[in-house]
Image 1 (cartoon, helix red, strand yellow):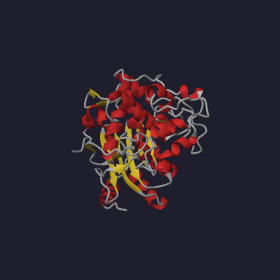
Image 2 (spheres, rainbow, N blue to C red):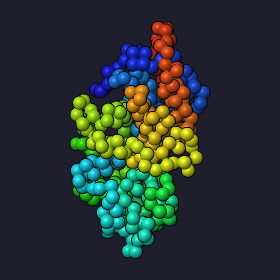
Image 3 (cartoon, rainbow, N blue to C red):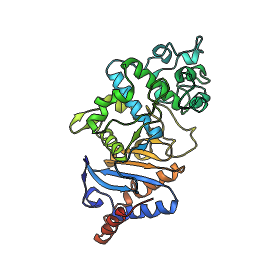
Image 4 (cartoon, helix red, strand yellow):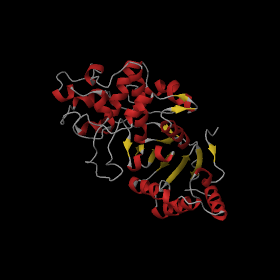
Length: 344
C-alpha cells in the first residue's frame, strides 16, 4: 500500500510538470540510466517516475545507501545504552584486534568510524576484494583491524566501507543479533518495509557499508521519516537526538574531489548537501536526499557512473524552486502521459 497521498498533479504538491518534463528530457540526453525517482513534497507524493521494468516496489541494490541504516542501528544501540560513541573498537571487538595494536588504532572509537575519520589504512577497505564475498576462512573484522591506522583518528576524512562493517560488528556484538534483524522491530516494520535482504560476511554479519536491498518506495519512506525528525505516523521511530547528531557535520570533506555536493561535510554516515539538505548515497546512483527547508524528499535508484551528473539534474530541475512555476493543463497532461510510458 502506498504510504503517501498522491498529488493529482505535481502542482498540487508544489512541483512543476514543466520542470519534470524538462528533467526527463535532460535525463534522456545525458545517457544516465535512471531506474526510479520518487519525490515527496509537502506530505504528498508529487512525482513517481519508474523506468520499466523497474517499479516503486522493485528491490534494488543500495550499495553505500546501506550506510545510513547502519548509522540508525548504531543510534538505537547508543540510545538503549548498549554502546557509547566513545567506545573503542578494540574494546568491543577485543577478540578481533591485533595483539599489539598501534596507538592510533587503540584510540579508534565508534564516533570515528561513523564519521569516516578512523584513520584506518586505505587498503583495509579492499579486503573483501582479496578474500571474496564468500571468504576463504578469513575473518573480515580481524583482517581490517590488522592493517592498523596511518592517520590520527578524527583528523582526516577517509571513506572506508569496511569501517562501516566494523560498526555492524560492534552493534551485533552488543545486541546479540545482526543489524538487519535489530532494525526490523525498531525501523523497518514501523515504516512498513518488508524484511529486506542484507548481504553478510562469512562470519554472518551484515556488511553494514553495502549489501542492503530496498525499493525506491522503501527509501522514500525512510527519507520522510528522517525529514520528520525520526517520526512516522505520529510516533517517534528514530531517536530524535541521534538523528540530529547523525545529520550534522562531524568532519570536513574538502579532500573529496567531487564538488560541491561531496564537499559539504560528513555526519554519521550521512552526507551534507548544498541547500541545507542531507543525504545517503550509493554507487551507481542510489540516493535518498532530504530537504527539510523545502519539505521535500527525493529517492532514486539507478545504474550509472555519473553520480555528479545525476545529482546535478535533481538540483537543476527538481530542487530548483525557480523552475516550479505551475504549468498549464496541457503540460500537466503531457507529463502524466510521459510517466506512463517510461522504460529503459
